[in-house]
Image 1 (cartoon, rainbow, N blue to C red):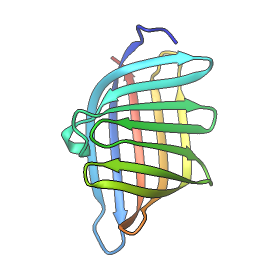
Image 2: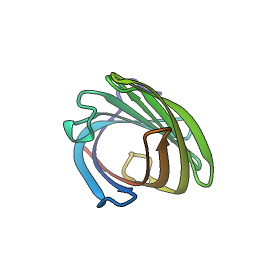
Image 3: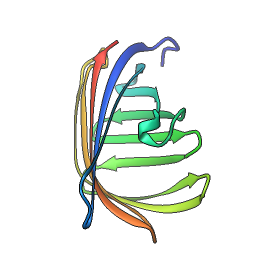
Amino acid sequence: MTTKGTEVFLQLTTEIESDGDDTQRIEFATSGKYYLKDETHYYIYTESELSGMEGGKTTLKIKDDTVTMHRFGVNVVELVFIAGEIRESIYETPYGVFDVEMKTITLASAIDERGAGHIEISYDIEVKGLSKTRNHLRIKVCEG
């Protein structure tokens, strides 16, 4: 992986559906870096206040039909998205550590060699003992 990276602009939209509640929509845009190594795409960006993780860093790794999201900062989690699969993870927050179960419903991505493109993921996520939601994440990436 080159150390320089390419400047990109990311537009992220998340829709969160809870039983009995209205759909919550979170949108934010940020600049970031794009890297390509061994046919694997990487994006690194800083979270905003809108995501609830202000100042945290997120790394997205896209290879073949798998997207891995690493979040670092006040909250720490690794989520692995593979369509049709259920994955478990640990979600570390200032309020405690929580077990998370996630099922990826659909996953699609199209990214060019400069990092421009889009990623779309629909998934169910359950923070065990607390909440269960259906989420739709859309990320559009343009050259920065």
